Length: 128
Image 1 (cartoon, rainbow, N blue to C red):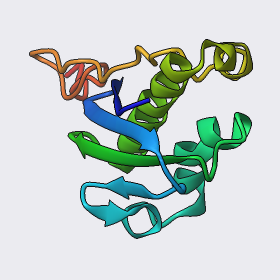
Image 2 (tube, rainbow, N blue to C red):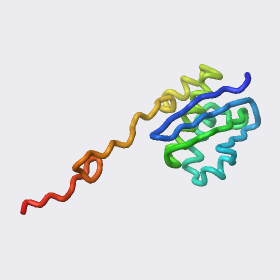
Image 3 (cartoon, rainbow, N blue to C red):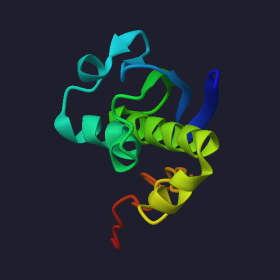
Image 4 (tube, rainbow, N blue to C red):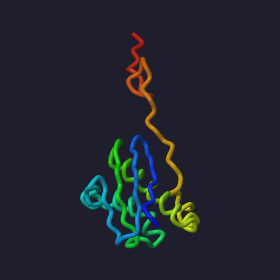
């Protein structure tokens, strides 16, 4: 097995994950995982596909991610890692699919409409 390259997206964040055999190092934009994502929740989201498949210490992962906010980036990375693991071993699909990790979240920000304050919020109505 060489290097497996997969892409994950969430909102406007795009993550490119390069998965190879290794000792469990995760590098995101040339920084360590706990240096890039400081909260435990975001670290958990990134590591979720690895812990479910018991591969915490089996693969080295290098990720390039851009766009969006921290949560969008974490979930984009999670999708990219999940797709890479499934392409390495198709048996992982039965573990990861019920957890909803293979589904690309389609929710995006709704656009602002003209004549309105935001996407749905209107300007204050005055009868007189």
